[in-house]
Length: 543
Image (tube, rainbow, N blue to C red; front, side):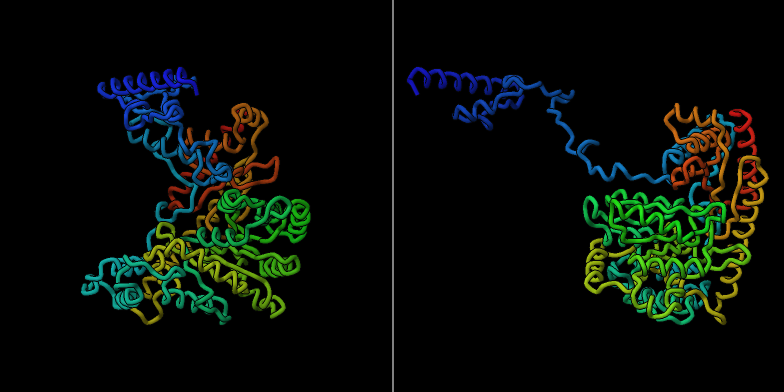
């Protein structure tokens, strides 16, 4: 390099240094301040501001700190998450919350309260907790109450057993990742009683954070592959949106099979075969999910149907996932709950020794406690080890939820102090639900343009509604699904919060909504009458 060139660079560096010193004395940390400055020509150039390097000037906030682009944006986030939708707590529910707030602020509406019939939240809808369950949980949460004579002895004995199974005799401690041993043993004994004595190994039982946790965990194990080898999972349409949301997040292929609405949402094996054959052209179907009793449809599948499904899963080499969350909620005459495990084992070793099955029961008392469990049947031992690893990542399910699950499967027995009251409360709850299921069907079927199948089980109705073409066009112009438009309009005019059928899936050209039957009978009657009046007005407006 020539002497002249070196002199020019040296003079330039001195100028930059001098400028940096003056900026520093003014309280501004310059890119050329001494802490960042280097006598190297290259380093000096890199220390220049964006403007002096010919780049766009960064926007400076009012406090003087340099702004920068967010690391996590809609464009840079996990694209699979953007595909996730969950209608049960979607936009219509968010608007319902806003309306509640507006009412509390004194803003006038055509109604005085918002009735949320969108979700199966039993206690939020006024269903009373079972006394025995709450007594034992109170004792476990505050063991000093074990000295209180107002608590029955059977509640105290349950509490002591649960606490003795917890680290430090406290529900505040972690449990084993698979769940408390004593609780899993009680669950196993309960399953044996439920299914007439068929064997259940506690090591096959996994306590979960609600049924959803177990379902998603199993899907994580099942999903793999790319392109034409991507895992496909068969789910019913209508379906509970947990399944579609989880499959979207895991980037799996959702394989829809349609329930037969004309036959009370029954399941046809020919429809399963159609869906499977079509899916095999572009993915690798590996699992079949069944919801029984149905959510959102409320049907109860027959034993023959369950046998047919098991044969189909065996023939097509599909992992069977049985969502039996509402096993205790069967109301219709002639309907009975049949567990997939019981039917599987009664079909003999040809099936019981080979068909891979996971099932997920629950109980209405478990909602907010997030308790649940799953049993796995015929799982490969090496995969079981991976499952154990996967559940260990979460440390353990909520211990209060595990404690409540123990009470659900091990309630007061005949001769114990709490038995009579427990049976009375449980019977009253189921009887009330059965009455409300029939009331819902009867009232909705009196409305022109609404048809509702019998609510055989679970705690929802999924009626089909007529939406005139004029309303369909207005919804389309607003960028909404017609049944979303319908339900949002109902919410704004009546305060009734329902979930549009499009959030669960439905055949093209049909429209539905899901509503829970959980509200107290007087409030449910009010709700149904408001739905009736709204629908009649809606048809007049858009016909």
